[in-house]
Length: 217
Image: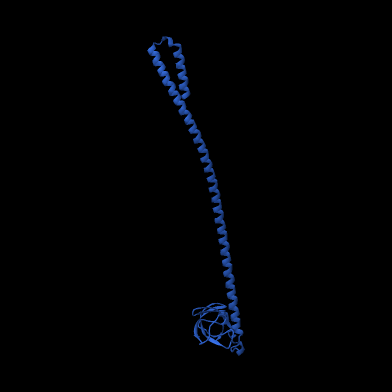
């Protein structure tokens, strides 16, 4: 558009040059002033076109950059979705394996219970009605004090040694097994070889210590 205006402006100048001899002074002055205004308008239009061209170039560059960012984000999103799909598939697979393992464990446990029940039935049938005196449970072995906190005492014996809640134990010095410290009562059986007890009595003049021995009362 500015090029057309410029061409038209040049044609007007050419026609004005050929006919300048016919213009009166005041008409020539009017034409000169009009041409000057037109030249300024054309320059302004050219400046606007150049500015718009620069802005359009910058806009295109920004558009290309934005398109590049969008493309990278789309690729990242696709990769993330793929990773999430793989994680979900892996979780389902792990869950299936875990469920199968639990079911297998339950099956083996049931088999063990059934086998144990069968053995108990066989023992019940083959056992004599009256057991000999030698078949009585083995007496409680010696145990030791493994810790003391206030009135509480921990021991290295548990249900594997026949200890139960309420079991009373005689308490002796480890340095002198004939010196009695007092009496303990089991308050909690923690495991096969661990229990807790409380102090029932302590003999005067005897100091309880770590590693003291205990025996069935």
